[in-house]
Length: 287
Image 1 (cartoon, rainbow, N blue to C red):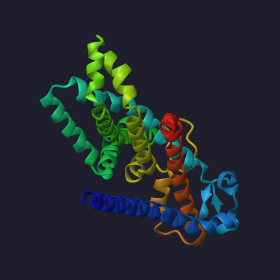
Image 2: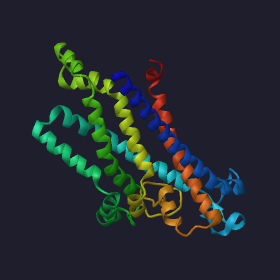
Image 3: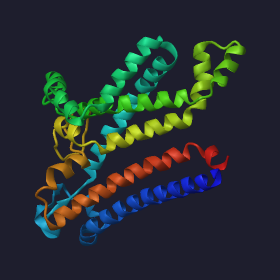
Image 4: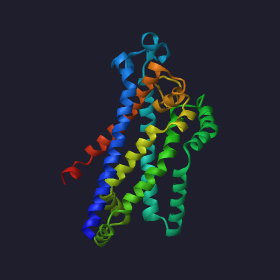
């Protein structure tokens, strides 16, 4: 009886895995099909060599430079991950190892509440509070820096909650053995717990980076949406996701197809993150 149940469960898991993989392949196929007209009409170089982004003129008079938006997307996501990662791990360590039980439970629920807030709430707060503060320092305030700070707030709870789960999954025997050897709490965390949880921590950072790359509404509201390569953190930028949201509603023909090329670039960036994550843990593949 148990063997039959195991076979049924295995079959369901295989079916679910095949369905998930098929959905990803269908999404990639759809993006390729929609982006193909622009790729064929423009070739590989105009996406970085054209003077600017003004696609409404078609293949002849239009301009299709995506590099400023690609750089803006990468800069905003990278800055957010660099800021959010140490704060998130510190938050997870505090909640897991230092906070009293009641305080830790309340703090965890607060982080969960922050993780569940809609992105438009972050964007609205950034628009009415954060960008005016930056504008006092350097007008107009809507800038790459504002986008980085908003994305940091958005991905911080995600990374923190997943990092805490990764630390909680480390066997308690590891900590007990470290205590038996006379290690301090911080030495145990640094030399035992963090290395043991590195796979889960890297996955948490990866998920946070993927969310930062794919975020649209909040970034659209605080970055200024100027298509140019930023020379400093205080310059306005436009990300690939914001560009799709702004223009897909009225884009036609080649313009619409070019926006799907942006979607392919976003998927490629996420795929690159997955590849980097796998490259950082070769022992897991060969173990």
